[in-house]
Image: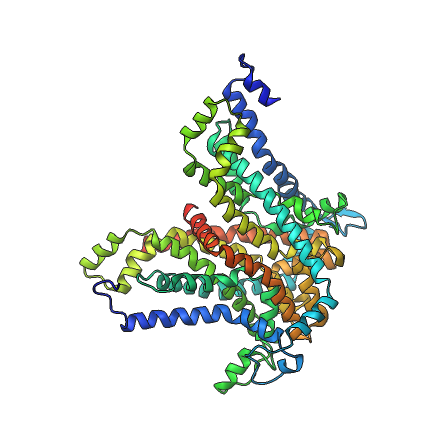
Length: 280
Length: 306
């Protein structure tokens, strides 16, 4: 099995593995520690040396989280927002990507460069007017305020365009046209099925970003019933900061769903990020 | 309507016309949304920044007064200083570590590489609020892990939240923890696209591992380094959730955690000074553009020095 010439126990190998184990421990420890503290009694937290083994109070603390904030409601809100935005982003970005990659129209290059340029503008620059618009529309304290502005984004358009131009052969488009497909039908029946891997990755990245978004939801969602999980966590921490066990139990519970999704699709996410990076 | 026009033997629209209509239709959602939540807010922010405006009360044109105040506002300079300090303390270790990590992950014959990639990437999916809360506990004065580890080597417990340096270290650590894995995955992709024969040629020329790294690897992945530097700059200038959670209102007792975005947020949404906050937003934007250009310039220079 071993390749000729490789020395499995050389100093270099040992160094590399120790480095990797060290990095991995550093990466995983805070997540593990959330669980440790979240499963211990509050008094066990205030000890020196700090607890490093999981305790037995996980469900007690979880119960306190559920009574202090509307955890399930917040989770549900986040789920709704993330799902709707993801579906919308996938549809509109792939549609725009299709236009930029495969349709000929005047001003195509200029418009595409404009799309790219918009990625440089920081979100905070428009924070106040966006808030005013949303409040004029009567969307404060509604999930619509989160969903509508995020329904399509420049990164998605850019990413889909890159993928479509390499993955969809022009011959296929021409063949579809010979069969009398309209442009939308071409997109829907020919292009979209080919995009599956790209859609999966963009979908996961979008989902994760929306799930973890904080500043904008904090600004537009004041009422507890519409809080997303991040805003709810912030409230939990702000109000009960002394009860670390409960607060960290909450952060752990809030991380869990995303963790599961990520572990299920991890290969795709990592492949997608590297792919996106290489293409840009 | 479109369907039927396609089927008709007599073509009412040429293919080129149809392509134009479809294309403009398909890209319009982005442009419409960007017009409403992108272009308009940017211009309107500029407009507001010339006014004294608390949204509920009256609006009064004050010209450049907001900017004048801002430039003599000690809190603004403090926020700028904090933002810069946290940015430097997080970006440099973060990208250096990511590069080392990518190099290590890229070693051939590595067993368990999928596990290691997964492990180092995991922090990135953790929400910044959760990160800020857990690091708040890790950097706790009395029962935090960091102070415990320090006590093992005889260092007195540090009140991280109280000092400027302590706060900046803690916040930078959060950023580093969350982003090292992400950047290293990007670098890893770049490393894997370097042709193997370049290394073979370098070996034949007698270059050792370190020389190979400096003269083959770094120049080859330079575009990716520029990309990550710009990304970290934009992210670093906008840092908000970490200081807001770790330091609280006003960035703490001596504003040690007050960053530009936190200052902007508090001016706008806690004190209702929309005009003043808009001026901060515009200066923040200019700073980001300036830094991105500066980065581009510096990273270009590094190459030509080789």
